[in-house]
Amino acid sequence: MVNDGTAREGLPDLGGWLGGLAPSAVSGPTPAFYYSRRVIRDRIAVAHDVFAGYDRFFSVKANPCPGVLREVHKAGLGFEVASGGELVAARHAGGDPKRMVRGGVGRTRGDFSQAIRLGFAVLVIDSPAELQRYLEAGTGRTRAVLRVAWPPGGERPDQFGFDGRALALAAPCRQVHGLHVYFSDVGIDAARVEAGIKAFIEVCHGFREAGGRLDCLMVGPGLSIPYREGAREPPAAAVAAAYAGLRRAIAPIWAGLEVGRFIVGPAGWYVVTVLDVKEVHQTRFLILDGGWNHLLRPVVMGEPFPVVNASRPPGGAEEEYVLAGPTCSPLDVLGRVRLPRTSAGDRLVFARVGAYGRTMAVAPFMSRGPASELVF
Image (cartoon, rainbow, N blue to C red):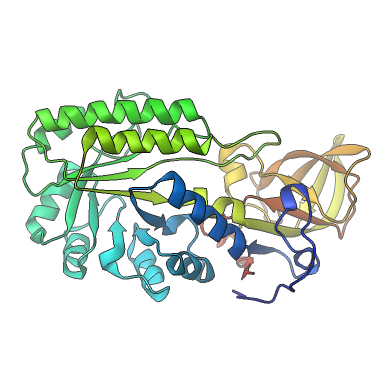
């Protein structure tokens, strides 16, 4: 369910990790995701300042909720889509393929033909085989960029992009207009932002020396958001300076940038109800009405989102609990946390879940159904 305006006006914000979430959300149906238009708009304004000089695209994979996509579209961002389903969602939100980037992996010749026919602004090519499919599809007017395998030295290799050897072989192709990079190892560290851009500039110079065109650059900053108390985002001025430096160093005709979690991550909360409190071998468990079927990141990353018992006043003595979801799997654990003494019926709120939440989870398992989504 998407609600575009049922949260009552005039209610005071809850504090701390709950800042921005209206108290009425805590008493509503659960499990449910809540997304704040105001926070989304504020984060887009920050992105405009930090990434000035880059055409900005929202990564639909971060959060394809229709109300979220409409808010992003109204703010003037294009869309980065990585599947046919994401393309449909972006178009329903008002997006025009001419203001879209087609990313992804494992694309067919048909995928490339569709992207060329629709006139996408940019087409990201992930492998030599994909480059061949793109050329067979006819290329058209769409800008094509090759994704750089990151990090370029081969540490922690994953399945994405062209390594240095493959880039050198592809560089002479005149139907390739530039490079794409996703900085997968940045986190919230300003020094890593600067180091990553410096390394990418070297890759760009090598690509040019091999005969490659660099009319276009497409960048995924990879910036995370703080999930721990006391953690801070990198200084905006430092990030802005680093990205301005990249443009000066390469001087492309056009530069684009995809952002997702940076914009919507802080704008979301996930509210659940405690169904049961139990102790097994001296370990206290809270059984919740939602778990990895809605929120997979804590299971994959081994680290919970910030979580608050919104039914209890802050301060005072806390106890350690293991947060378990309602499915029949020992993997369905959202973290080990300290909370005020908690009872069945209490409401827990997970903060900073606006990105990679509901649609990254394993909702079909046990057919419990999806969580509601409300935009306020």
